[in-house]
Length: 195
Image (tube, rainbow, N blue to C red; front, side, top):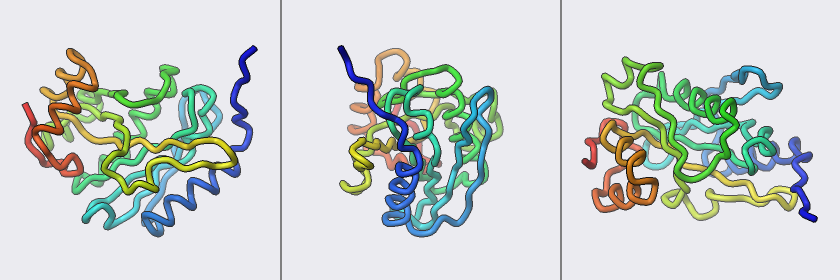
């Protein structure tokens, strides 16, 4: 007999996650709530300024309400150096796609947005949002234990067309190996492709 994790402590997870964000990122400068089609829980995106070396970090809040559907308690952090007007919209688009496709969230998930945000693609030559483990975040800002449940943070960053195709063709490990060898600042939205 398997025991299913208890995902009923949503309120205490929220307090715990907010505390993590406030401790590491400071006060949010902006926030907005989004309705996920055909679902009862809102997902918020909050913006924190001047983090990770001058970036603005867009953080999901409320994704943890979908823990049972997505397979774990998690939130997503998207730090970027520019593109601040559209980046939160792309983040919520990607999260909505993951939720509505009933896809288990995790390392290597990639959501393409070429058709939905053509101006962004043209301006920055990025076509997809990729979820990675937050290895380049501070050690105590990667995972947190809330009421006995592990909350996983994911680092979202943008991929170029060539990087996206590599991920589709050869998988997440190959993509991350290539990025590591190339050494780009994935926070930098205007970075060149590694391929």
